[in-house]
Image 1 (cartoon, protein in one colour):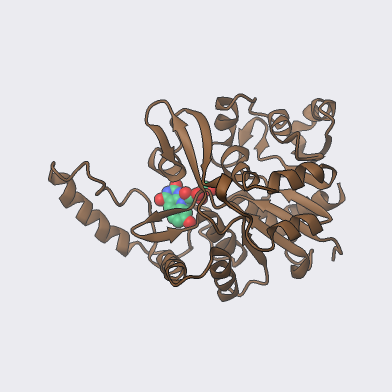
Image 2 (cartoon, rainbow, N blue to C red):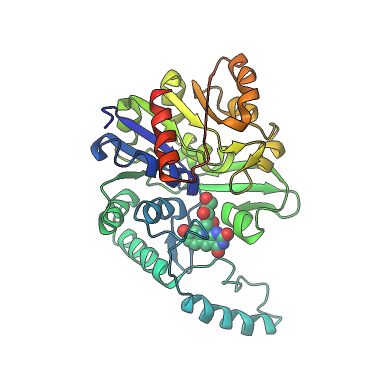
Length: 324
Ligand code: FO1
C-alpha cells in the first residue's frame, strides 16, 4: 500500500482504466478522481455525464468491454422505440429539420436509470457532486470521485463544415471525423471548482493526469478557474501518462486533434501540450527514442509499458506514476 495522497485528473475510458490500477494500492481515503464534465449534455431532458459514468461503471466491473462506455449486458428497447418515432418523423419532411432526430446518441435501458436518477436529483436541488457520491455508493465503490465543477461547463468544438458544435455532436454525431479548428469551454470562466477539488489538488503528494484526450478531456478540467494555476505551481509533482503511443491515440481522436490544434501526434506533442503543468511524462516503451526530446523541454521522461492490457500492467503503470 502506498501512503501517498493521490489526485487523478480524469477524462473517460483511459482514466477509468488507470484508476483501476490505483484501487487496492492507494487507500480509498487517499485517492481522489477529479473528472471532466465538458462532455456532459442534456438529451431527452436527461442530464448525461459520460465521463463520470464511464469511471463508475469501469471500477464496478460493469462497463461494456466492447464499447468501453455504458453497461455490459445492456438492452436497447427505449432506443428502439425512439428510433421508430424518428422514422415516422423523417417521413414527414416538414418536421425533419426541427430537432426531432433523437436516436443519434445511444442510451441503454439500464444506463437510462442512472440518467433518470441524476436528473431527478438535480431537479430536486442536489448538486452534481452529491448525486455522483450516491451513484458511486450504489455501485458499491469506495472511491472519492468529484466532478471538477458542479456548474455548467460544455466543451464546444469549432469545425469548418458545421461551425461550432457540442462535443457529443462532434464525437458521436459526426464520429469525430470532421476537421477541428478550435475548442472552447462554454461556462468555464464562471465555473467554480466543486467542493473538495482544490483541497485534493493542494493536498496531493502526486497529481496524475490520466491518459485522456488533452484537448477535449483534460483541458476542460484545467479550464475551471484555479485548477490550472495549482498544477502550474505544483508542476514538479504532476505526472501525465501519454495518451499517444507510437504516434497514435489508443482510443478516440486525440492524435488527429493534436495535429489539428497545432502540435504533433507524438509523445513530444503531448509533452509540449502539458509543458506548463507537468514535470514528468510517462511514455510507452515504443516511444523510448523520444525521451531525449521530452527532456530537452525541461520535463522528465519515464519509459514503461503504458498499454493497460492486463491488471498487472495497469497496476505497474499506476505504481510508476507515483514512484517515477
Ligand atoms: N459513444 C458513442 O460513440 N456513441 C454513443 O451513442 C454513445 C452513447 C453514450 C451514452 C452514455 C455514455 O455515458 C457514453 C456514451 N458514449 C457514446 C460515449 C461518450 O460519447 C464518450 O465516452 C465520451 O464522452 C468521450 O470521452
